[in-house]
Length: 522
Image (cartoon, rainbow, N blue to C red; front, side):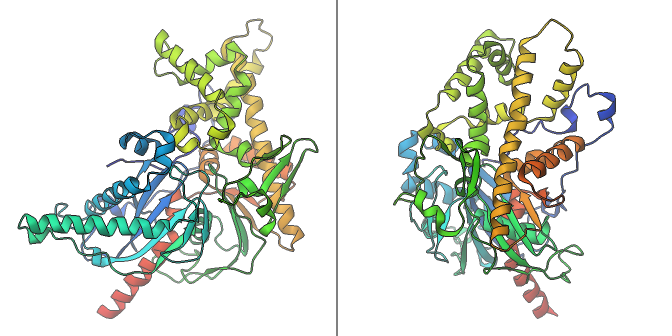
């Protein structure tokens, strides 16, 4: 299997464990704890357990989640688009159109993943207990159900008004038929796979799916109006949330019940945060285009138009890959800072060849053309992007800047010092852009008569900030509020995993099925 945890802007190194030689007044402060799953999935699932399948099609990867009534944290696995491209031995352009071979590959992977969650693993899984299927997609969704049409702008495979769910499930059904045919040919009827049950399939924009997760388990519990902003691809969703207290024993006290719902008659359309918010660099204004106003920027094929030179999509300012590229470009002419960054990301900075390789990788990333930056999912080095962001958006950086300021009287200014100065300015510039985008959304909703109770930052932005030490997290929130002119307490970071968030709506169906079966037994 290709274990592929959800991507963040930063690597796994974030958190208090890497804040080195902090000043005394900061050393007692700790990072907030991430939520911990009940870990009910430590062993394989019981073959009588109802379960659901959520397929998350994102900008970085494809993930499979199995949801049960027992735990809000699903069992998960996945593969990055880049890794899949390498496995299939395809170049970027052919890979983007490789649906005919990518679907069968993903179908096999998905079925193998499901089978391994049940004991014995060499016997086909109890697909008759599959009671819910949901697709969460980083793109526009037209219509409903299995035939819903998908258009994406930053996923590994290109989707333009395509029935992604139906195509994928057809590949699943064909793979099941092939496995059954092989079992019969080998005279092993016990290995015949059950057919995929006929189910109502939900296809949702990833931000819409995530909104349910925040309502059920996260920072939108008890809130009447909320907006959720995803990180890496900068999607977004704003809706009126009708809240009900929970009496469901499967949920913690005070959480929303599974019959809470998202009211369609809510605030103006706030999806596609990365494109609905546009910076005019001449007038220095961020404008939010709600509802249908965004249509002027969309090509007939569903892709987004290239803007005039003085206009910039928000995604190109705050999305993880664009942020890393923007920083690298800012230091390309500063040899000291570039070499210092290369030392920090090189596999072995003491090895001249590996250091030279890291420097060349930075040069290549900085030289990436705009048209290729929009295809970062398969056309750029995701590990390199993450390594750069791990430097420029880290708690380490803030501590190092404090240390640098403390010894400013020294005449010795090192390459690392040059990098620290550049990265520190970039850190706050980055969160200034984020704050301005949030402020634009907040003000636009207010113009339509809605005042958000909460703005939730998810994805790479939220996950990374949640791993900051407490002092830095508070400082970032204060900066976002000030820049965006947003009241205190409105902005917050998601505290649940991406998989828990995007699987929540699917899990609601699994819980309903579980309760129905339990009621019948009693």
